[in-house]
Image (cartoon, rainbow, N blue to C red):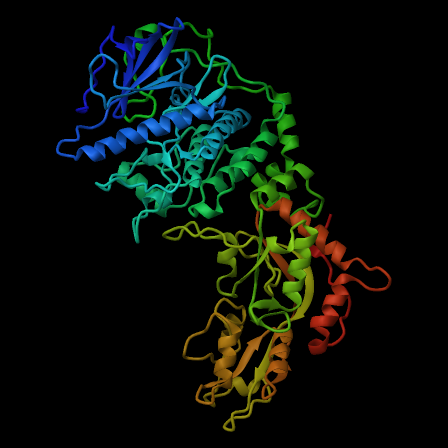
Length: 639
């Protein structure tokens, strides 16, 4: 096994498979058209060709060969319609040749690859791209269930049978879950444009390959199908750097597939949807769409020297016999009526693709299509809600649990959305980082993925925050409370005492609107820098050596802090106006927004003279801020 093919036309492998002609070659092997003399049928035989091991130890070579045997046999056992059929695995060739040689006998396909179809660089229609993706996903899921990772999912490794069905092929670099992606020479295994970012991160060490890595590659393939281009381009190093650091280029033609592709191409593998969730979403898009016809086989004069699927080089074609195909390859056009039906079925996704115009306008509070909500739930098995940890009585981290009005309201919303107690995760956010945790930051290096799905974090409803929309309001708050503490040096009795020249300073948090308010009203802020949480402001207030004599924030929060620290007091509300707190969501999450609005309506519904909202208010807020003036209006949930 010296790195050179040993097969020749006329050679008989294992006394059964007669090599007829070479169909293609790549770095991992040579594919032959062969005759199974026992069954009198044509097959494809892949002669595994390994790089010249040179002085490599024989035990290393034996491990490589053994792995090839084991994985080929595993693929053979998968037996899935969307995975190439492996008929046999042979050691040596029975003619006195190298006993370390491996031959894989597979079905012979009279078809072209997805890479051939995409050569014109024209986008495929969304429904048919989804159909191909669904079939590949099913094959990939079956392979994963067998404990194997493909590690080279890409268009040239997706073939079509004569009936148009897609299947996954070329497991030449497949491995088992958890195997490291880098070779001993630090070469990356797989094709650069389709590598997941976690496989390119070498510090503190290479991440293991996982099923999520294969799903990333499927996401890149779907992107390429609908856009007619790859998302990350350049030379190999540029591509790999872009995958790790750059945001995903926006999709122009993704339509209903846009949110799915974006989720698949999250930098964090833990944030990618599961194969089952993807299958449900793709099934919805492809429902009632007829199967396409297969692309034509390559012309006979071009069939003799084809590239092996899965290898680098010129635009690859696939194994084929050169037989006749349909007269014309229909570019997967779908009848208008069928496409309209798909759009109606996937109405939730259409709204997602439309963005704020769809969700903030009339109808934003209407109930989502049940299938759209099922897809959302499948993609989000856990509801992650951002809350604050230092704003009593709204929210407080106490004895290893979040307590207060907003955490309890968040849990109740989650329950009404159909999540169990163990499926609702509350996560701390601050005024400074709550938007970043909700929307992520694709311009950061490396890109930051969203960490929460909702915000119940004293977030006043605003229209000027990019990427954020609101459901609610759920509480009508008064802005501008001043919490002070007399330290025996200066007594603060009014706002004017903060703005004069006595060397006293106030504290608010980074990211708060009060930072700008203080500047406008000539209220000096602490020289020590604004903290990220109000707890740190309170620490400065309680520190006799600090120059902080006041904390400025919303009235309900200053009153709650005063209740906890009896040597502080709320001296003034300075007429900062009033705003409603709203549930923050990502712009475009129309399905989730509709469900949250529905949950809030139920919580505020009056029965027997009271409501769930009133009970929560009386428990958490009434002791500090007195009786409620009435239910807040759901201005962001209008029909």
